[in-house]
Amino acid sequence: MMITVNNLQFKPFIAASEIQERVNALGAELRQRYEGKRPLFIGILNGAFIFTADLVRSAGLECEVTFMRLSSYAGLQSSGQVITNMGLDIDIKDRHVILVEDIIDSGRTLYELTKKMREQGPASVAIATLLLKPDALQFPLEADFIGFSIPSKFVIGYGLDYNQAGRELPEIFQLAE
Image 1 (tube, helix red, strand yellow):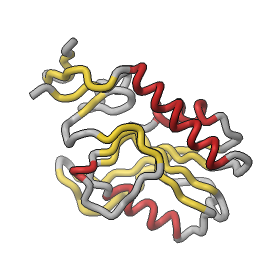
Image 2: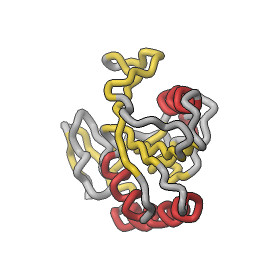
Image 3: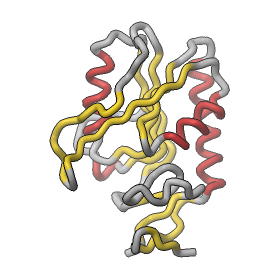
């Protein structure tokens, strides 16, 4: 069923049941890798808030959770710099850090963030992303936990938005051609 969000048409892309199944599988992978290590999950706002909550519950690990807000845009174009709008208030030295992102397009934001994180001496830094657009990747970045690899098309739902609308949708929709 097509939906309209801010005057644009979107078609169903990934069902809520598929998302939950994949999040549960990622949670099992995280549990296996981080059992007994008390990792620090860092969700990247705004888009990753739903994915972060579901992933942390699915992993079932003793952990900490916090959030950061980053941007690399000034208006409608990339500024070429990653701007921290809301930073960390936790020391990550010797911690197992898991950065949780909703979607990786060019990879600029996470590439810059992981460089800065590694300078702070964590035990490890891993990336968990719900969606990866491999054809759009422009930076040497490897995600450790990937929900779905998707084509370079605009998507909304499950935390992802179009002009702040559509985040509440339990499934993911793709812009209709």
